[in-house]
Image (cartoon, rainbow, N blue to C red):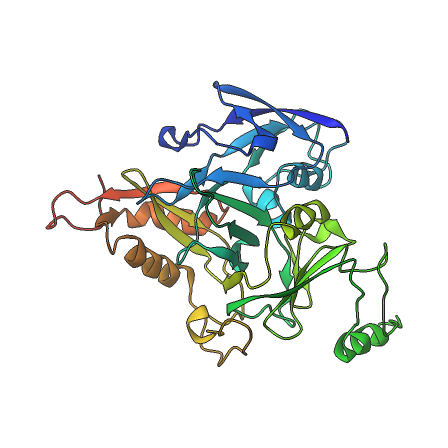
Length: 358
């Protein structure tokens, strides 16, 4: 496997957003203003030390320079990003011909998703998975994150809580009758069984969820990772699920959420990360699924971005009172590029109006 050299520049989007990124031992990084990183040709995982208690942000936004013949998707895959990640972070840059020498932003800074930080958390709105492995005694806890593909509007990925119930290496694919009928209507006849191999859309690994019929799996079409293109399953880059498969045990908890807006603390600053709101996805609150299986219930109205922001602000400031600049926050909602930015701070005077921030 070849060696890829990349110069990572910490983006000076806002001075307070400069952070040193702690990578895994396999991706050791030295951040000295200009960071030289030696990576395998394909990134195996984005691995970060968990933030200190009370903090919620990991990573740092970086930039790379486009090489000859690069597409945005090539760059995205090398750096643990999916289609939506790279495209929304780089408006105005051509996806297929970004141009040699163009500076491309890598949105590799994340507000960790709300809720328990254990097992697998899949946030559909940001096309991203977070894995919180059990901490090793004497070592600092880490979080791994990967881009994913999710279900199409007519084949939605269900929300709720479940678990990994089985794992299969080199799986066969048994297309459901509904999928066979869909392909037949387009003139393509699918066999009843697709054996392991290059034509198998599950790739080399599959992890079955307690939700009947749903898998986390690899793919033979990696260009679609980071898009809303599946029949409800979760699709990963082949190298990502290869890395993850041996680390996730059967019975690992899985929580599938739809949070287009995340709010969290980075020191004294309240940070907002906004994504485009998915259409026609059932909010998690009505899709609680017991570990091991279940079926989502109901289909209530979808929240808009402002409602999502308000709810996440309340959650983030429940134990740590803070103030939000709603004008700044609204700008981030409209931008919806997935890049976290400071939009508030800790409240000093409880009587101070929450429309301002420190």
